[in-house]
Amino acid sequence: MIEFSDVGKSYPDGTVALQSLSLTAKAGEITVLVGPSGCGKTTTLRMVNRMVDPTAGKVLLDGVDVSGQDPPTLRRGIGYVIQNAGLFPHRTVLDNIATVPMLRGTGKAEARRHAGELLERVGLDTRMANRYPAQLSGGQQQRVGVARALAGDAPVLLMDEPFSAVDPVVRADLQDELLRLQSELGRTILFVTHDIDEAIRLGDMVAVLRVGGTLAQFAHPSELLAAPADDFVAGFVGRDRGYRRLQFVGAGELQLKDFPSKGDGWLLVVDDDNRPTAWRQGDEHVALGAVHHEGESLRSALDAALSSPSGRGVAVDDDGRLLGGIEPEAVITLLHSTDSSPGAPLAEGEGALR
Ligand SMILES: Nc1ncnc2c1ncn2[C@@H]1O[C@H](COP(=O)(O)OP(=O)(O)OP(=O)(O)O)[C@@H](O)[C@H]1O
Image (cartoon, rainbow, N blue to C red):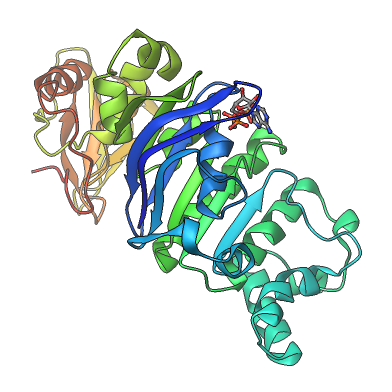
């Protein structure tokens, strides 16, 4: 757990990078710091490993004030990933990953063996082990950066715009990979980005900072989308927040319709096990399109409805058997009914169609 308690940072030239920040990044969660350029995100992150010391307040790591800790020792226990990976150019990929464990006393052979495992874990071919960073793509370098940060088995990871320098497709892959790794490893991650979409995708909790170093809102992503604290947060979160919010709302209470429910000539074709196979109108057969599976969010329910030739989405259970039809109006109605309790995230297993 990382706690910021009334933390401030002013520089001798009078710049106030951060003003009285208080927030807690819980153990095992990804806490994202997001905000416009210059709002103090990097300053906040670097206070954890003492690359920057606060001029007011305290930073506590698992309850212990970091100001009393020796910086090099502290840093060896904290993984750190930065934009452009920051790899050592004259060391091979394997040795980049093995560096911190060796500094902490692990033997070379063991450190390299573990580095090889981590290489696979972040989705890289072990044949890359003996390459130098310049012989990798930007996305591959970022993966090595993540592997290197994980190598010390540090429970805390600081990630400063780690995926900003790669194209959007690679970036989405890296985000998926981080979420997959995190579901296995459960590290305490403090993640800095200026991209609200990345924050919403990755964060268990998101802190929105404004220029001048003040906290505008600290909330679960679904709450940021549903109930931005003020105009600044609303503007930062963006115009299509209503649509993006759908992904955080479970479809468990969605009213399903029986088929066929409309006199528009569209019939749903099912096989002998009641699994939908196609749409039919007269002699014409049309592919099913996107289907909503139980347990998925309202976003998938709406997508199923909007992409269906009949205007009604198809909802199926885990075995692909028909549960009922989804009308877009039902999705909107359910979304509005959740307005009063926007903070509830879609828990695993929650949101199953009944
Ligand atoms: N050594 C320094 N001396 C004076 N001002 C500084 C120093 N380091 C940072 N600042 C200022 O502190 C403020 C916060 O900087 P910081 O790097 O934390 O912002 P940021 O939100 O991470 O920005 P970006 O998204 O552009 O990286 C900025 O106004 C910056 O110019």
